[in-house]
Picture (cartoon, helix red, strand yellow):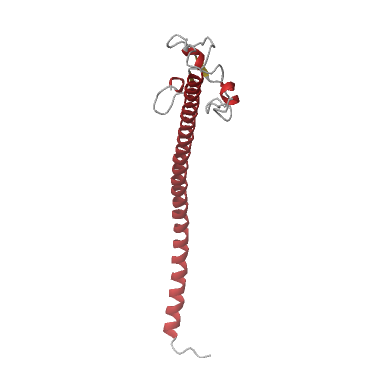
Length: 165
């Protein structure tokens, strides 16, 4: 094989050597930048994950609050319907005798399908209020059920106490 242009061959070799050296430098610096980029990406992902966790916790709290409000509304509505039906059936009774004596009575007489569960305690341990109780009394005389409140000491997202709802 005959090399026609000896000078271009030498130039080619020099160029290739220089190109390989440049590539090595580029590759090493590229690795350092990649590590920095990786650390930045990990930091950004960590921040996003922390925000998502906080949002999911807030969403969970909000859903429990909504569930408790819904349960209280449902039970209060059942108590009102029980009172109205009792008043229609026997209007001569005293007012406090028209209210149910227990939550089980509301279930037995089909005003509710099952005993309500407090979303924060996970139990059916509501604070029952009788129509003959003193206002703001923490204990009931157990004569009847006029109202129902949560027994949880949880503070809602709007800074209100759920046991005051």
